[in-house]
Length: 297
Image (cartoon, rainbow, N blue to C red; front, side, top):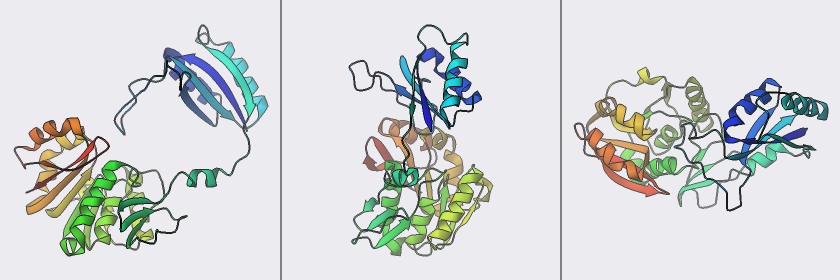
């Protein structure tokens, strides 16, 4: 395998990436060419949302090709394009060392602690000795592997209630992603669980992950959520949570709990305002700038 390295200004990055894709690059990545220097730029965006910019002022674009001839041909073709002028440059072509990519990828995902006794553990790891409750979950297409604070806070809320509080309770995981919250509810005693998502891949992922963990739940698209629930879990983002306020509150039975995450600390007041006609939200947990908001309905 060979990598073609190029330099491009911010306004050419998108066009260059599209051209590399058309030239059958196996993958294309973009880095800040000034990383680790005083000129380094930080690009931040909310999870799940597009980045604020396509690249940095000086972006290093790296494209992988299966052989050296294809990489050289791609470099030659790009050099002839109108957009490949001032600021664009071919930095070189280099061999990519052979690696065990599966093992390398797996090494990046270790068991995740929710509480000292509750852990999310990839299938290639043994659970920690202190783990009394475990969710087996491998990184996949759907959001929710336990590595993000929003997921951990929701699971921590479930765990701190314990099996007695969830036994016999009807639970809705709205925007289920990998199904991790629904699986967590099942692990702590709930036997009547609906997990819904707008993404069919997430629904499929939830079904497979539930089977792998030996728990029962029903997964489907959002219209599969029907009636009222004792607990409604929604780990999405602040904007959709605001839009969904009447729908989510409508699914919580009297005396039930609404549990929401995907919210930044600075967004607490706008969420409280959006839900004021339906429920009194409060901040129940926080981690790394994210908060968990809950309401007793």
